[in-house]
Length: 412
Image (cartoon, rainbow, N blue to C red; front, top):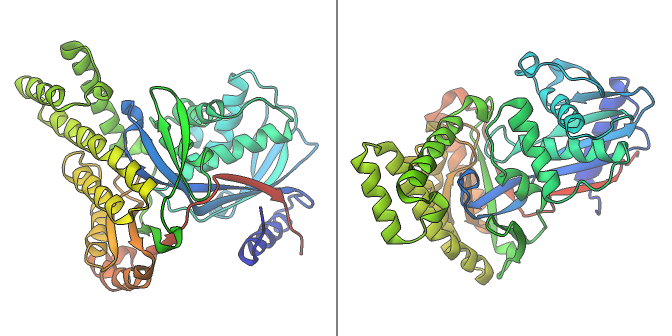
């Protein structure tokens, strides 16, 4: 990976932090993991539906070097109040004891790897720095994947690649942290390639990288960071929707011998809606409505990506967002304020909430020359809508990037 000036500055900051905290990473490595931007089907992963998205250039950087202590010593610049976290390779605390700390992730990685039969014998010193918004662009999946790759490298463990790595990253969240996440985030980050969209077919389990068919410089994917912080999927509306979808799939299995993934045609959909109505499941009707209609738009989005038709992609993105707001009911007031503002700006093709919902970041698909107008509109209107976040919101124009990269730490 070629290193530009901004990346060099990140390396210098990581090295400076390590020296200040008494951590030895001199001559070590920097692993960089991306965020992700889902183009469909948001919340489709835990319903067995197709997925499509890209890696984006909001990152987590982990600078590290093996030590001889048999322990991990790690500091996060994003959570300096926790100081240097000291982690055993042989045991992990009860998840409840670290539930409110970012350190639950390295503890969780250590615990899941041991439970999976991996021998951990070598520790490392490390410093973390990230600029991914706290909700909507998969900061947790990015961190889990980054840590997993680092544990494996330092301990010279091979063979954990592809979906095996995705599965482990998911288990860190589901089995240790208690977050009922699917695999969308992990797949979109782990497999991300610059200039490509990642398509995942759950039926075959195959990944396909689809080149964008137009001028990639003509559009941007935008993170509309509301400045809010979501405490985690396990503490959000996401968990409620996940439970509802489990109930929906059980209902469809009982009454139609199928699941949400099997409702792909209009007659099946109408039958399912009627049955749900007969049994008084109004809220489940709405959840199915979003998932079914988003699926109908999905293959159009793939075609538009291949053709380079950003305006059509944006129109589907917007339609998904309206349904996520009204039918899936997973958005939040700050997220919708960002969408309302973006919708008024010339050159914005589509906008919607991102990720697990409630808080965090919304997203927009825009013509490149609209970025300055969008930033100005948000700067004017958003603080008036939500003055509590007037100093914490941000707008970032993003490009598609490789999901995971690693290179030697630069010491200038």
